[in-house]
Image (cartoon, rainbow, N blue to C red):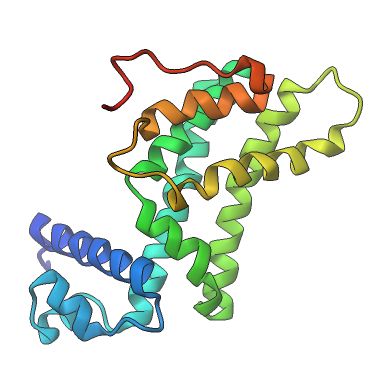
Length: 206
């Protein structure tokens, strides 16, 4: 029986994906070379190819890995069996928290999915749809006494419009962190401007 891969092998793969995502996010997928990824990881190019056969394999792993984590989040939330507004608020908080540690991967998913081959792009976009549908179900549940269920999907896309582009303006040194923004997004989406509450001072960043 062959030996399984060591924990250090998996850790090294994750490090490579993290560095590649950062380079793709900052430089663009097309403008990044495997040599630059190897340098960022402090690896030889030969060692890098031991983990990933080419730059395209990195792109697929980054995009699919990120969207798979988001889809798993939806499954986890369904298992909690929260209802109504409590469910939607929890979902919003979870996805904002997930984005906090995946800004580079999210930028890659947002901007570089166009470089995926058809089969890979379809697979990734199918998982994105699972995430959107999970949120749409939560939105529809909150609006169950309202007039038109057809609005659940458009409202969900408006919600993602708030969340998906936070990485373009959120700053690590900013007064508010991602842990603060989840409740703010939920307040704004569910109650409007007059319902938004500032986080307690102890949670806000100096």
